Length: 103
Image 1 (tube, rainbow, N blue to C red):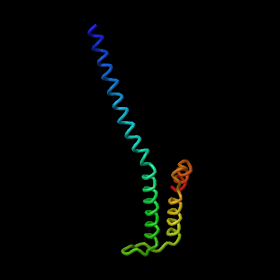
Image 2: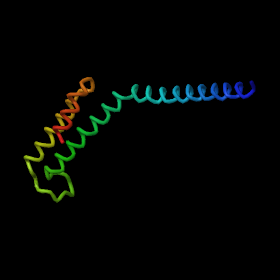
Image 3: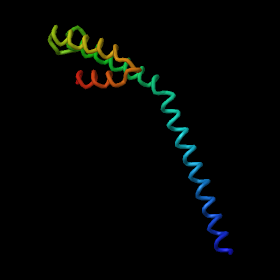
Image 4: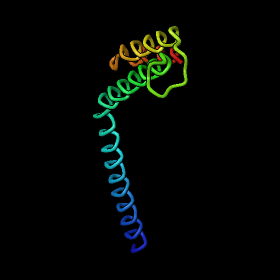
């Protein structure tokens, strides 16, 4: 009878540890989900700004650049920046397709 009691106790401890692990994991995922849109907006803004920087780089107007002005690249990067800015968080499927097309 004692060995059975020991197994029950071990089993209960295992269940409690699993429940604790599940709670921690759920909390981590919930935090990720709660901050998803804010991280999306931040990354979208950064991507758009970097495209503008690349466009400015190829404009040849930045100090200390050795690049000759290339109007087509300048326009292309500005267009990419506008497309990145137009990505919609709430339509992730379409946004994913547009990101693939941009690459």
